[in-house]
Image 1 (cartoon, helix red, strand yellow):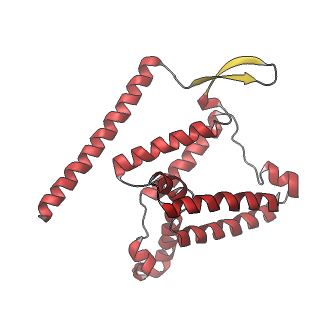
Image 2: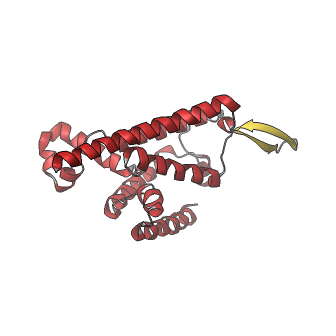
Image 3: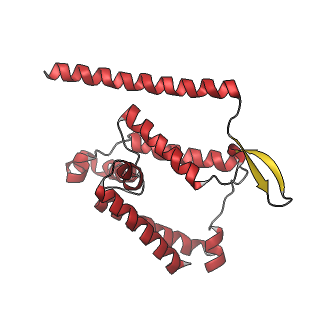
Length: 220
């Protein structure tokens, strides 16, 4: 029976890879046939002239269009890898890998790391993809630059890099702890959980918005 289950699982895994490959090939074929379909008409504010602009060079995309694309990406993720989108676990695994460098395999004896083994996995590669995608987008749009502090922070608190970094460090630590307590982050709950109609994820999503708005008002 176990051999039969393994055989079925293996065939199912292969079928997902085939479907994913066919989907990617179809999209590339369509792209090549019709040229660059990602061209939109937008108003140039400086002279009021209607101009064509490729989305690859736009500074910002519509949040509604991006939301739809992320939803489609989630479908593909479940279809091909049977994994939900999420990134916070990658940071927890990274902490485990760093600790493992000094303490060896004893790290894996911890309850958390016995379940989430500290190693490079699909979440880790997703984080790398996010960084690479952001860099590519900023470069193509001509917006890439090195800044010590964001513009909004500088307008409110002045050019204070050390203060900004300390606040970001504390905020990131608190967010990381919250993501582990909630067993998910804005991606895991806000995207993957909500599209599966998980009640806890919808509650978490509401808290994300309430907390984010409140923090924005308190800081800025």
